[in-house]
Image (cartoon, rainbow, N blue to C red; front, top):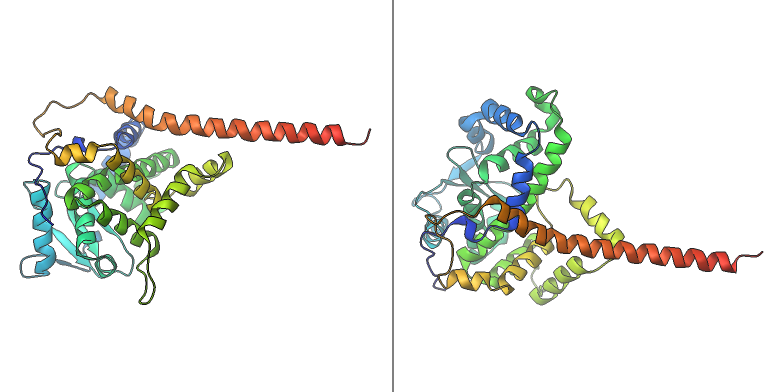
Length: 324
């Protein structure tokens, strides 16, 4: 299908307010700059490439030319002037990543290419380009190194209070995914493609003779977001605290809400922030994120209130029925 080129689009046009707020919160943690500086200086740009590209092939017009052409189309759709290098690595895990400090590049796992069709691959490529355009790659690379190598194996970080840093880094990492999912949708410009990709990332491809229902998956995403009581909300927090990605049902639900808000249609229709436009003040990011988190918090408080009320009533009923 033809896609509308989004000339001079700024990443601020699609960035999730929770992404910006979480990153600013991360930067405010004492010692954050020290950790970033130490990890970046220890590995360096060359070390990062050796870490991620020890067993990969570089995509070009002569190497995986079909994927190379799709990468070109994604760069043109989001009007990105530089061409980050794209690699494919033989890995049985479904994943992709944009990494690097000064010169970021994209790595696609072979399992990802095997599971997704062409348009779903386009969504992933645009998602990764979104990370690069948003300037996520330095902090995401730090996070991946810490998760891959392990904090205890980085002796030069000894003496730094790392648990708050790690939790805040992963919280931002997850929120950055929500921003880049929007970039992925703008790159493919087909909501069903994005939703189908999330469904496959969550449960794989249906084998021959069976089928998957996108409608059922979206119903499941809605159920996860809105169902359950306060204790379920607590368990959701605990389940995601040390994850680097949000659950795919959550990502699907968040992207669907953004699409329904009209923001996507406005961008494709030509109304969006350009790169040379004046940037929004950070206070606006915090205000937007406060609204986003505030709705969730108020809902959780109400649920906790309901739980406590029911517990109090049950206790009173039991007390009244107890033998005197």
